[in-house]
Image (cartoon, helix red, strand yellow):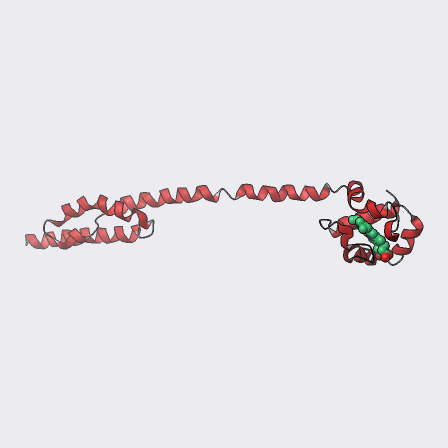
Length: 175
Ligand code: HEC
């Protein structure tokens, strides 16, 4: 009779132990060694010569506290990517900062300020009027692809299409 009771108790403890295992399986395996070490004394108490000594024991309390710790640590790195969004936000104003006069001087003046190689000169209404007669789209396409001695994009490889349009209008209008 007494052995039956012990058997029931042992079974109950084994069940608790299994619950503990299934809960603990969810989190860090690296902690498994430390936990089984912590649980060893529980197993000793449980046995009294019974096979339940093999069960890691009633660990739900420990297992429950550990995931909350790992959740907290995983939240810390999750916050890190936020600052990365800021450079993108500052990159856009840079496009608005486009200085058409300065870019013309740096990139286009060498030819369009001097008429070198037959380049239509800055502010020369006649020269530009002929070219603009075919429409901005065609003129822009020539500026992008190059035309005769005019190199592609006027060698301003970091100029956007919109910026080229601004440069062309600037040269046509003469500033
Ligand atoms: C190395 C000299 C050189 C530089 C630098 C240069 N151009 Fe030109 N560009 C030319 C020449 C030469 C032509 C005339 C080409 C032709 O009609 O054969 C020309 C023509 C053009 C035309 C007229 C295209 C057409 O359809 O007739 C545009 C627009 C133009 N350039 C834009 C620019 C812009 C914008 C820049 C600066 C970002 C620039 N160019 C820099 C030499 C240059």
